[in-house]
Amino acid sequence: MIGFGAAPETTNCSRAGCRELASWRLDWRNPRIHAEDRVKTWLACDEHVDFLRDFLSTRDFPLRVSPLEATERTGTERTGTGLTGTELT
Image 1 (cartoon, rainbow, N blue to C red):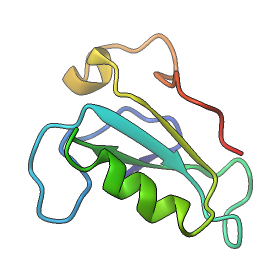
Image 2 (image 1 turned 180 degrees about the horizontal axis):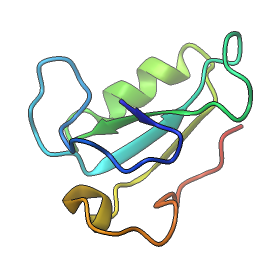
Image 3 (image 1 turned 180 degrees about the vertical axis):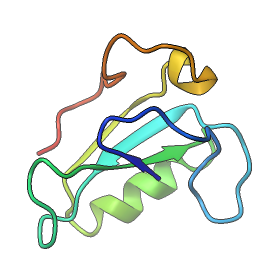
Image 4 (image 1 turned 135 degrees about the vertical axis):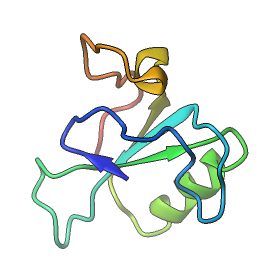
């Protein structure tokens, strides 16, 4: 998990036991315990993006899913947030 707009320390999928490289970013928060400005980030490979999205959605957590940009995967300098998906609701 990464947070607060930081570049990922690792680009492996966040699904337990998965070591595949991530290609998706899931930004979410638990509204019962997190203020609107506190967003957590999970990374997902193609195989697990739907599983992680469903896990968070069934809990009614605000969620944004977007492709993980190449600069985030390689750890090179970033010029933007890297978020191109639907805004958190």
